[in-house]
Amino acid sequence: MKKICIVCDKDGAAYKCPTCRNLYCSVVCCKEHKKIGCVVPKPQSIDTDVNIDENEKYDFPTEDTVPLEKLKKLRESNEVKDCLKNPHVRTIIKAILKDPNPTKAIALAMTEPIFVELADACLKVTEIEENK
Image (tube, rainbow, N blue to C red; front, side, top):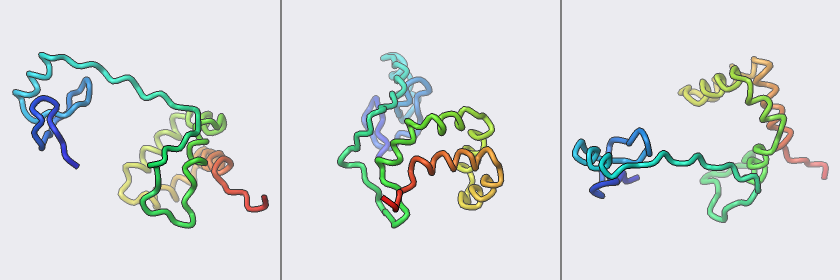
């Protein structure tokens, strides 16, 4: 992926503006960028509509892959939202994301009842009902 400087349009930008998160490649371009000014980007709003972009697809789907429509419904689950309010759950999730062996980290997290509660809430939303 190319990293294009916001100021000079050269490839190889290695730095990010702490305010707007745009890339720049040098001290000179940083100073120029500050002269121009930048704006803190608005946080992306969570679209509660479950519209799936035609281009959104899994690169390597398997038989266990959860359809994107189901994953997007997690946003609407009050039970999932309630679980995520717990700072301990968020700490566990961050640890899983940073762990070089996420499978092992998830297995360890599943020993925590509060994480199991989150997993169960997610499964309620995403499980495919085979009886229907």
